[in-house]
Length: 215
Length: 415
Image (cartoon, rainbow over all chains, first blue to last red; front, side, top):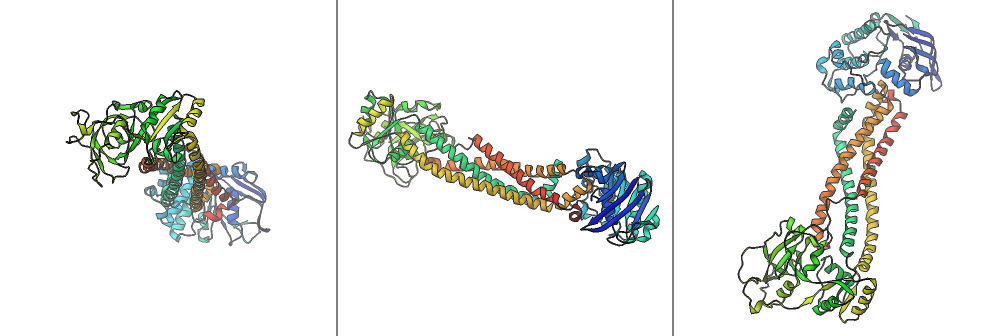
């Protein structure tokens, strides 16, 4: 579960985020809609420990992310957070397998690469360089990287932004399934409202610095 | 981690290669300069340390020392053998060794002396020279294949390959000296009577521009085993180019200098004094060379810093992605340092090999004329220090180029 309380974030003195209270339950998938710049990605980054909050708390897996030092936030992100970044954030020169085992640099735990790639239908791409894959295949690699460490929560920022409608629906399906499959909260940022029905919950960020509401 | 480091180096192979080549070149020059200077200094000390006096014909003391102790140039003049006899009989003298020379075989100098002079050098093959025509050769001549035990040859007048042949005496290699790391390694020693003998015959064939070859059989040459011949009689005495002396003690040395300096046409010099003057002028060159070597090492570090920084810049997206997925800062830094370490170690190892090659080349091209042997396989702790310093500086340079990445926003650079 992720529980957010009195969370505030400003950029250059301009308030971007102000959330009095918000909870993402385990086993549920949530999609965040809203115009650009309203703080959706900022929220994901604060939950992931990539950005520090100005005030408030984000408790995920019993840990208040906002109270962690930068080094501990890195460890939290490595162990607890599965994050599918916008534009994939994969190492293009490395193989699919290397991108997944890269995480073992931090954990030293053998990762079930084969199993994960099979589950996402890209087992035959294991030794292929990421740079040579299609957009859909890359997105699957990014999801595999997020899920392979069995995270405590899964975040995805515009995961279908570069994909066609059919692929987008397929990828969103994979993400929403993960919530039930692993019993974790899944939070996805998207602009594509047609995919909203795939999620258990939809939240609307109507404009900048306004409290998000369940749609 | 090693796998990822190697992978990164492989994907940026051109930059890795250029970085490595730059380091090999700079390090090789620095190591070679240092090693050569140390070996030259040690070679001078090793050659000159044993004798306290050199007596020779009037002229330049440095020239006398270079010609007769380092065989680096032709003896300029000669003096009468009686000077040696007087020195030998003097109560002030512990040991005295006469020298005569001026001939060569394939650019290797033929030095006439007495067999006792070679007593302090190890004889690894054959026997000591005893009769005119016998020669004992330095180990480098044997190892290079120029001369082997039993080879026979005739000498050439002068030290260039264009002199005339002294074909009235055939030399035979009877012994080979062990390695001394001195000028003796490149020299052919023969009893002094051989030199007197070849120069006592006016009817030399004087075949110019002809390179002698070792041979097995040749008629009409002097051979001590042949029947005695009026024309080939060994002269009882002749000229000497210098006499190396070890005085009985310090007081004896002073008296010896005073006594023989008074002999007309004779000069007495102290090799250590002459060489100290030479070393002090060498010291200035050494300082300049060290300074240049330092600049070169600094250039190597700068090149590695620039290439490492460029490589880190190229990898900055990868690094920021690693940060985003939560890989610890220390792990990322260790991986990048490992990359630098691998490139540096490869560069330093290759530089070590290249230095041995360059020293061998320097030895091959200069030892004969300079008289100092450069052993390519002899190395010093200072070189290890130099290599360690370069390694350390490179790692520091890498660290300096990595750390600024942590002041940047990973989200901005990764996407």
